[in-house]
Image (tube, rainbow, N blue to C red; front, side, top):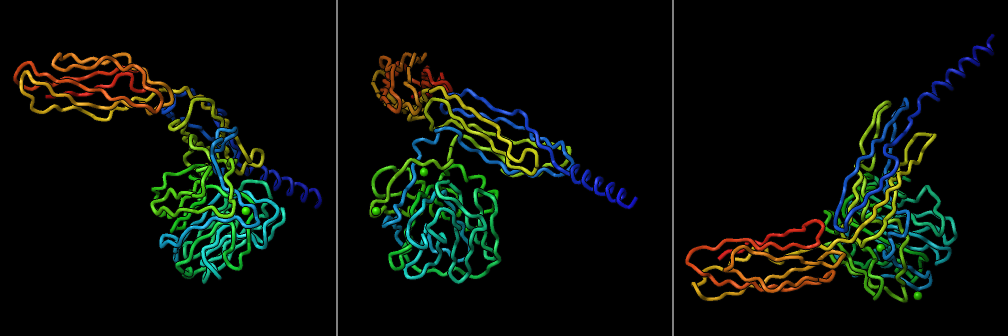
Length: 442
Ligand SMILES: [Ca+2]
Ligand SMILES: [Ca+2]
């Protein structure tokens, strides 16, 4: 009898435990869009929780094909390669910071490999690894504050996004956007007017790192997890508040890595530091918002997915929205996204209007303007018309190559006293602006 009660109790407990799980589903389960270059579209995914406990979601967008081809990274040989960044006040961070990058290390280098070292004999701050073997930890030192080491063991040959933050109360480490370690620490980080080095420890010419680095950013503030997630797979403008260095490493040649932030902290590649094709999952056409959400039992939430085709060539782009969640049966739900881009021309006029001002009746005035093509297809102008015969438009310039431009001179010969307002209409194969109007006045 006692055994039976125990059995029933444990059965009920198991059933209750079983019942208290979230269950995820998403609609639609894939996205395909046909767009023109320069276009964009927003689609909504509905994420439903048909279970009986809260559903916690973290959302990533990732490329699933070679649509990141052309993106570059830097590669260090672990022997003597490094990048030097001249001392700059913008990199002297005392109260808060975030350092984030995509990294892929290889077996080798010299003990203890330094990915980043701000200092000379000692560092104000540095990112290091604890060994040169295939499986190792990554850590951050903040002088006068503390050190943190990853709980996770990272493996050679895999791209990881690492982000260290310090907000004056704790150092935190996020790996691939997920919190790996928090350590309470306080104090002011040491500040010296030293250079910053990537790939080695300036001290005693040691700590050479063997591997790749991409999209390295330094902020003078502690970023939140959501902020880290929002920009982890994307390149950013460089104008974001708090950003003090942003090396995208997309130059692909030469010996300078430019900083996209307002501080222009150039990196100088030394001793053969190489450019490589980056396979870090960075893409600039697929965005999701929000990047984290909690959905109550029996509820649903909307996830906004933006496909953004500016600055891209025609072709097919493949990616996915990856929803990491706590549904034990479906912890990673992947929604494939395909964007098919048809190249479109993009007409651009150098002026928004042409005002000839005061012109005597019977005399002639000529004003020029430029038509340029900022699109990804040849621009064909099919007509340029103006209903007012006082304005003469030259014979049609009908073809403007991709990224080309042409000058058009408009001749104004007033036939009578008074003001002459009209409109020049330009028709072309620009998918978004097939007809453009330029106001003319005199
Ligand atoms: Ca890059
Ligand atoms: Ca070398």
